[in-house]
Length: 347
Image (tube, rainbow, N blue to C red; front, side, top):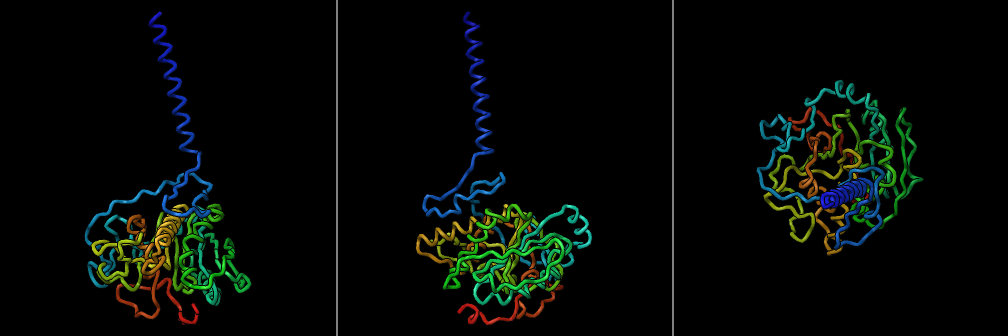
């Protein structure tokens, strides 16, 4: 009798354990999760969930010190090809474009391209789109997303097969700085609401630039950053990081890999969502404390790339300043700035 009672008890415990395991798996897999810092307000984005699983809560990376990687570390005419964390640095000569086309074309991928055309920046849209139609992801499906406060000013540019243009209206702001600070929020909201259903990869670029040469699947990766053309030969102590400890964008003098430009970043759409959402949360944290980072969103972008390393890095040929002479280390330019009067554009 005693053995029978013991057996029944063990059986009941086993059933309860199995039920708890099933409940745990269900909750971990299907129930929504939202990470909201206790010190921030709660705009709608914090409760916005994508229609796919796999989003993980923010896990800050412990800071570590190591020598700065240098793009021209070997010879002045040769670019570094691999970062210390084993991310490839893409430049002319490091890949076979025909081979990559053969590999990626059967995957039937769709690549998104976002750009902001607000105020007088709408004048750049036609040239931007025409250059993208000529050079950006040829042979692949492309979705252009133009965010603008003046939809009527966006020209209709003829597009090739499998390429679409979506004009996304956004709120008009009186100051350019406000537009810049809201860019990360707008992109993350757009991904959550729409883009994650339409594209596999997403690049976020500046509209006042133009594609000059082939830009293809060699740039695809989980999380992609582009090295700023103004600082790739400088020591990290001279990078224009946010140096105030009170800002969430703070970077110490002993930290830093490359200085990345805000004009180009991208990756898998879910990773871009995590990245832009994280930057936006950091911007809100600073705003709650009355702080504006030194270079606004670019400061937060560099801080996040320091703790969330890019899986692929684009050399300055993918982000070039047309006013600078072409150095021996760059074979060609793929994406660069246009002539413009910044004071007039932002007035």
